Amino acid sequence: MKVVIQRVTRASVTIEQQLFSSIGKGMLILVGIQSDDTDDDINWLTSKIVNLRIFDDENGVMNKSVLDTNGEILTVSQFTLMARTKKGNRPSYIDAAPPAISVPLYEKFVTTLSQELHKEVQTGQFGADMKVELINDGPVTIIIDSKNRQ
Image 1 (cartoon, one colour):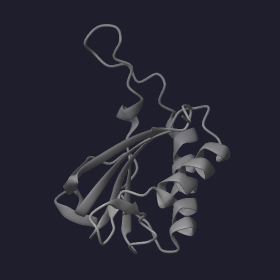
Image 2 (cartoon, rainbow, N blue to C red):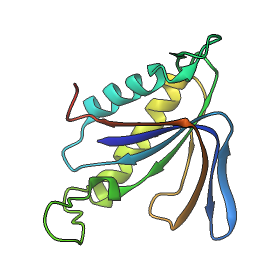
Image 3 (tube, helix red, strand yellow):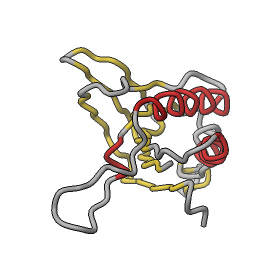
């Protein structure tokens, strides 16, 4: 599982010109799922995400988590995070899990993340053509791969 975390002052998802979901201060998380991802990947990532200290404390030092700041989270499933670009100019998505695997894993990721955050996590709509807007705060952008836990 790969995630791209962006610290935001606000973020939203629009589908067919209708606002689908939105958050204020918190994190926009793009989520890519591979066929071999498991509950272990979900549990490790969700714990890492809610405890990641990327929000400023009173001294302007990134020392607080989304939990500490009572922030919000918006997640968007994004199979293109699994792109292979080594060969040629057209990305290959063979590492992305098919919907039969990725939908249940994504739903479990959102449920587990909501439990860790102690509030509902906002989402996009799996497989929809979404327009994602955000104000990246900092900018702060972090990439985490559950297969590379360094």
